[in-house]
Length: 278
Image (cartoon, rainbow, N blue to C red; front, side, top):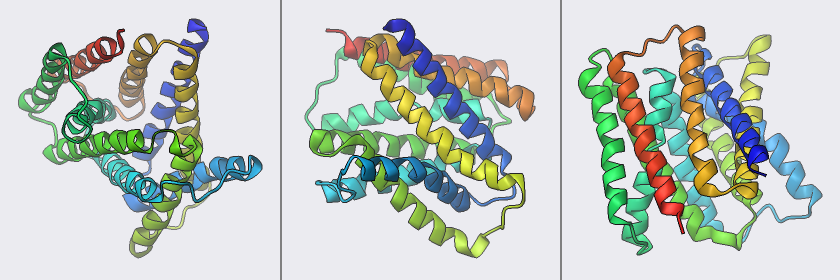
């Protein structure tokens, strides 16, 4: 089962990486149009699933579903913006500190406990972010800020999903997110709309396909494997994204950038392992 879980996680990380790379390659499209196509592409999978299984599209906890969707939309938009300013691997690493913000929000709003050792791991990850900007003078501050705020909203997404709990089917949650993102992204994209040509249609629509399968296989991996063994493997996305960034986009990673990313991944991995230990 562990081998299968690892395979699922690798597929998930590759799918996320390809989505990130295609987003970065779409230079002549605005971020809202990219969000629109990312969402439309996933709806081709979520809508048929819900209709086939006779699951209500409206869901039960409508207020929380809308809230989760808005938080997710803001996070996704800011993340897509960030990778237009900074290297993809750096943006992905910073966005992954979302669980740290989720832990803070859980402490404040859900009265969940944080083990003392986790604060040390959080600090290690935050030092990684500071190293990225403090020592890499070539890095665009706008990209760092966009990725950080995106991570804050990732934390809010986690907390909202926790509040939804088992009250709604996971695909209903994703479907809400995609519908709201498609509508808002589409409306905001109108003024700067660029008509796709040729293979651009395929690239834009593939964003939703990669996004959907990335989420699907990550879920499958978590279902068949031990969380503390499998969850750290999601950071393979950072490695894959850095490799593609180097060879496809000629991105440059300094020693300080790599060190900062390693600190972030180390802090987050130790946190996951500690948190999930019985």
